[in-house]
Image 1 (cartoon, rainbow, N blue to C red):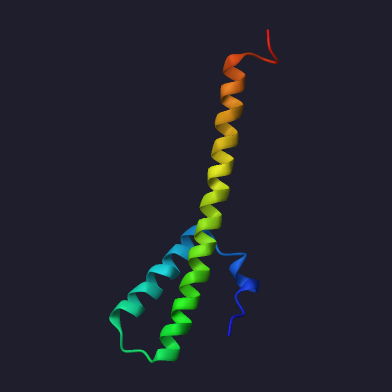
Image 2 (tube, one colour; image 1 turned 135 degrees about the horizontal axis):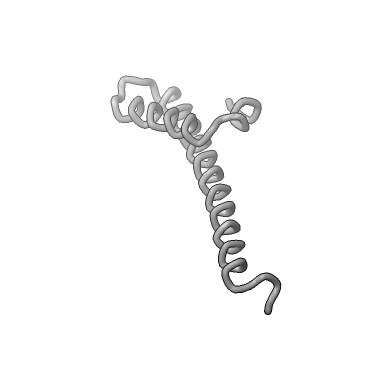
Length: 79
């Protein structure tokens, strides 16, 4: 079934995205068995979650940086 947790944590957003694109291409092309299609679908779901998690992390970092910048612009600790 699924053994992804070991290497998936090391995947960058770009690596996960590229693999997801490949999975989608293979599913769209057809020519695979039902079992292979299901395995590809499951892998695609895992990769989509990885991508979403990486994007959420990047968004949180950006939000924090913007918050710190806004606080710095309004004054250092309240004038």
